[in-house]
Amino acid sequence: MKKLLIVDDSREIRKQLKWGLGKEYQILLAESVDEAIKLFSQHTPDVVTLDLGLPPDIDGASEGLRCLQILLQKQPATKVIVLSGNEDRANALAAVNMGAYDYYHKPIDLDELKIILSRAFKLAELEKENRRLQIAADQDKKNGYSGIFGQCPQMQQVFAMIKKVASIDVPILILGESGTGKEVVARAIHERGIRKEGNVVAINCGAIPESLLESELFGHEKGAFTGAQNRVQGKVEYAAGGTLFLDEIGEMAPLLQVKLLRFLQEKIIQRVGGREDIHVDTRIVAATNIDIHESIKNGKFREDLYYRIGVITIELPPLRERGEDIEILANIFLRRFGQEFGQKVKGFSTTAYSWLRKYEWPGNVRELENKIKRAVVMAESPIVNACDLGFEDKLETCDDENSPETDNLQVAPAAGEFIFAGMTLKDAKFQVENVLLQQAIEKSEGNVLKAAEELDVSRPTLYDLLKKHGLHQL
Image (cartoon, rainbow, N blue to C red; front, side, top):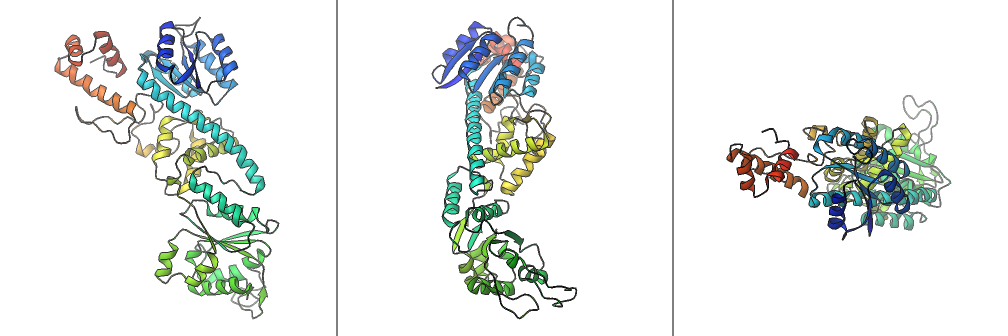
């Protein structure tokens, strides 16, 4: 069973949590900092719930924050959920800034806490997998993978294809949306193949004017055109003995398609302005983000060239279809840029993870990489939030992002009207509670006893709910 350490000076709360969570987790109980550190060192649980008011400072937060600091020093990846009262919000936020995963206001609702714990354990498992993948990725890089990561079935098929085709000296066509990593795959094929000692040369066929692309590819002779003062080798010759990566080959002009086809058939080129046939031994790996079959149907791309370059076709999935790979890649980039910029970032807030999962990623892995780089630069705490990622235009506020009561909350525009799109069970429950409380208070004209009877709860429970929702001053 997964291990959960509960640190709380209240015997009743320890008993409540052990009873409520004991079927799902192996519960470890501590009532002081020393006990907590001892159990943590012995069992290294992935998740800890921590009351800030620990002896001897049960009315303050010094011992709780000290405990948090020690636990995170021992194991920075631990997910610590701080339990606090509404009046202790400032210390709870301070704990989050120190690296706590989340905080939760007492009184404890077991259903809500179970959701938070489930998320924390899932994240801890994911980060463990990330670390394992990073080790494997480092090894794969030595073997020629060049930093390709992923565990979804589509990427596993890509890895299998790379292994199969790398040592087979045939042209390869890589298909995929912009930003999916086509050039990275091309370089991995080169580095694992029989030509790895040769050069890998890349050229973007869509970024160079047609009038210049032929010279870039095949070179030119002195005097071939105005300004051609010397003989110049093209990229095909530079890549001799290695690999030429033709990115966005679907943008290549028809005349150049014919000349490329001749090279693929005969391994012979002629420089612009020259008549000499030059034999060149270069492997072609091409890529495009267009619908190549539609382009052939429209007459924009030669079918015979497609069959030549597409002897082997590898199709890369868009990032939005790669499931948990999004979070894996986000954490890999977070560590990479954190080290590069000297920033002590440790993870993502729950709202940030929510946005990472539901965003469509039109720019795919390249866009994700850029957003994480931005986040590392902008983050003001070890926990990256949605605003750091650049989603602030899609959020009303980022100030309370780490608060369990406001995380992803969509407030109803009018009493009785609920919006549940994209909300968690916890958020939906909070919103329903909020509206029902306001309705009961309005109906009872502020009479707490009547409002409690209307909601079928006790007066102390109603007071707690009103305080939880910030309605106790109504």
